[in-house]
Length: 310
Image 1 (cartoon, rainbow, N blue to C red):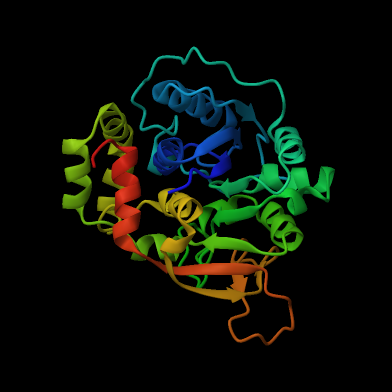
Image 2 (cartoon, rainbow, N blue to C red):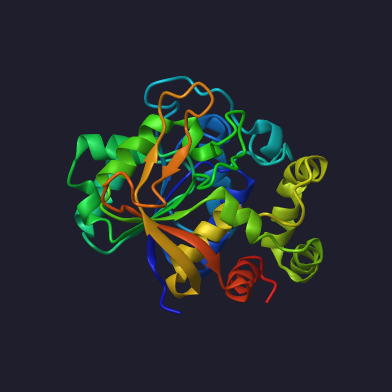
């Protein structure tokens, strides 16, 4: 498989960590741009630096937006990922320093330097991308392909606003800006990630066979695994990893639907919902290829490689 050149916008986060490990195993990563989301920006930047140091890569880490564009978030995901986003294991401060350049400026610069070359994988709230769009409206035209992990396309979300998924619900205004700015993007939603969960035995096999990356991931995954078990989330759900797999191997998509997708900004119960015009009633131009099914064996192999468990 050809090594895809990637830009990754992220808020690490346990599932982001697995996706970033996959990217460094199977692709060439130009940079990590980091936002607040799963936990605060101080933690997400530190976690990104920890990951790059673990991998032994030279990937630059660019800190970005510490809060949503407009409103303070209703919640973060520390109750899933741990207060530090990495399971509260207590890793040492990484030696790798973050870059001084803001994430949004790095997104603009890198796509100017490599127009039409970089696949952008958005694993967290879309705040940095929205700011880049506002600073440089031509930014989307220079991105070869955008893959977004976000949304819940039939309303089975994972936040206090029942239809909303976390990444979109954290900063709906940013998602609105990005969804309107990009002519087409791949959307890997929360519901797809639940459908593509792995049996616990498959996950345990990776950990048993894997290298130091598997040891690291098992350490940080403990808090999230307990949360999933307590909330009847069966199997190993790898949300950001699925989006990364789609970015790495587009041919693994078995079934998808192209539709117009918009973001609800005002609803008392539905703010942050992804609204899909399934029956093409509203006349909007289709802007999203919604990934519904992937080849699970190919997905499994990409994760196994990232954990040294092939």
